[in-house]
Length: 229
Image (cartoon, rainbow, N blue to C red):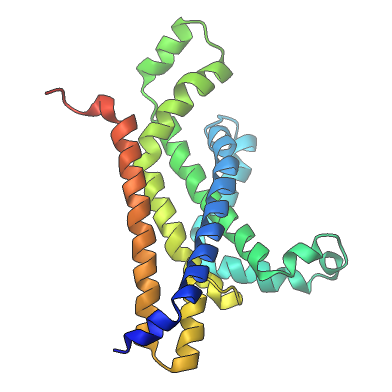
């Protein structure tokens, strides 16, 4: 194994890691903003409200992320109306197409994670809020959402890790992320083991950082669930 290949291209790996982190972070933040109101509406009793959201989450959870990226990056370009619109500068760039696909994908999964957490809010908490005279929206803002977000932390941490790992397909549409860097180095040196093991180590480091952060969050927000000594 030739370690010099990794060390000589370490700066390139750092650039790829930054692109990966930036892409995943933006997708998660925007996806979270989209998912919160959708999760609330997903628990609505009216099928005209929750039905379209179910269709959206079913599609993005039921199809591979790679297919979704291809649909956005290659598929939208076949529509002449889109190519002539003000949106074309956005859709012709691989980075923004990947960000859109990642955002819609993670928003669908996050919506279902939070939907389940909201639906499983203990009835006693809701009854207590009603006893204080809180309106429905005040219950959601002060009781239901904070409680649901705490309980959703373990599942959401898995979604963050899955999103990081799924972002590896961004290199397929010319984005120079970690996987893209590994492919470039492999094509240059014909050393797939060195090229991809280095990328894998970077992914592991980022993954362990994410797990550590969420573990600290769980320790803080689940402190009331730990047995008293």
